[in-house]
Length: 212
Image (cartoon, rainbow, N blue to C red; front, side, top):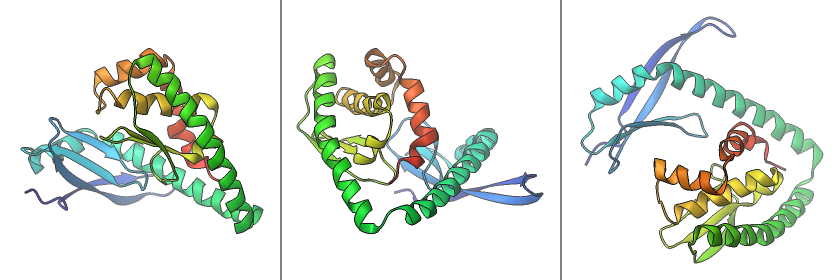
């Protein structure tokens, strides 16, 4: 069994807002995937994904080849987190805990009405079926599709434009046929929503603002 806590450190120089050196610690994670990959978590943590037969050396080479992309995404995520913290501080001044709780209840109720209707619509178009729908409030996930065909959606999406909500529904509905993010999966998404990339981009750039 591979040590899931192994890491690789990227060293780089940052000129803004002031010159300094900084390290980015990348966490290596082995799984039964077939290829190498990189992901940036909502917390800004960098994950290097490896197949079970993958080596630390190859993961390090991948990180170095993608160092520009990694640094850009990490800095972007940090900026989003800082903006989210500022917005949270502002929200604390706008609503009392009781008011925020009441608003959340209303949005959850709206989500319970909205998502089943849209899920049923897109499931019909794709010719698939699901078991049930669950409304959740995850901090780092907008939707999910489990192996037992349970679809979960984040109530905070009710704060987003309708097209963005539908993109998340389409995304999870397509997982009922393709439980991966392969080219075939994205082709299915595009068949139901030709402009999905625009909605996906909006969610990546503005998802952190979907808070009460």
